[in-house]
Amino acid sequence: MTKVTNIILAFLILCCASTAAAEEISLFDPISIRFTGDYLSDADYKDSDGSSSIAGGQVRLNAGGFSFSYEGQHYSWDNVGQLNFGNGQDDPWNTLHRFSLGYTLNGAIDENWFYGAGITGTSAFEEQMEDSFGGALRGHIGYSFNENLKALIGLRAFANSIRVSAMPYFGINYTDYAADGSGYFVNLGMPATELGYSFDKVSTLRAAFNFDGKTYRLKDGSAVSDAGYIETSSMKVGVYYDYKPINNCSISIGPEYVFARETKFFDRNGDKFGSEDQEAAFGAFFNLRYKF
Image (cartoon, rainbow, N blue to C red; front, side):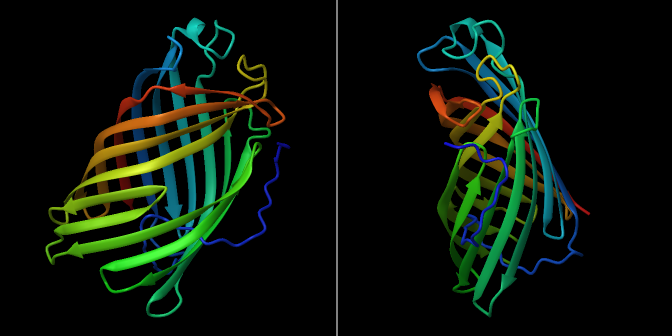
């Protein structure tokens, strides 16, 4: 596929998040900052004795509909000589970086109908940012049946240096809270679904499923693909405990299980030349969010 480095997506889309909140965005909304850390245990690549583990983290800033984030994923390798990719001597890659900048607008159409739209630009790379850019446009429309039940439907389009594609989304959100904050909630959707129970306004236990996919531009002279690309994809289930020590701060921790892991390889022109599956692995997740 022809490499796309300057992303121009020309249609407004209907997209879904798995949660369905519809509130007017204001430039005076509180600023929030989030720190995330995660670890994924060592796992073999299929048909190979080579393996890797991943330690990562993200910082994300939100203010008045705008968001900025940086994410780093550091790979630790074992038995690189047994891998089916790379040169058999050097680590295929070490730390992968990803920056994103976006804007989201949500609002009410009338008493029941609501909408949302957003745009995001990204740069994901090993060392050089050149030819590492991507972008997405998204939008959704939804309906509030009552205070407890909402639904929305939409579409997202995205593009980077190896592909241009679009994906439909849907979401159903149901909550049943008592005055003391206890109660159930369910967010059904794609690519993320979660359900949980809040014991009060401080403590929540929830389970979640989501799909993750990212594309990174490898470094110049990479032993895997010189200035080429990798596309990673996986599915993840996790169980999390959320705790709010004060109104402005929340902490989340929990174990995760990541499966259906695949890495695809592309040359510098965006042409695919191979792929590798990796065994499932267990991991751990930590998140700290503070609203000013």
